[in-house]
Length: 92
Image (cartoon, rainbow, N blue to C red):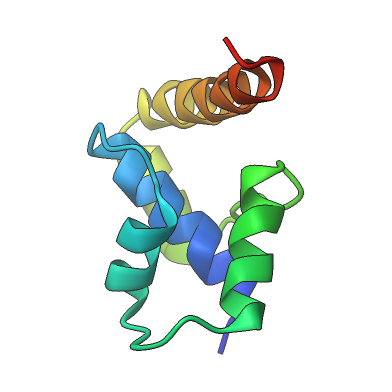
């Protein structure tokens, strides 16, 4: 089973591809966790701070091969997430 941080990164990437802001509540709902755990909160915060990125799996590699624009969409989603973090830290 993959680490919790990787699961959260994948869920957040899916949410971003759907045009949704990956909040802790949405990630938690997709993960299927009934209660808030310190590990879940810590993994989510690590993803939010840019410390966790999605590792490629064979399934994702196949998807990339069939959809050349997915790399661009993925990069754009990652950049937008980091920009959102910067804006929040600046208080704009």
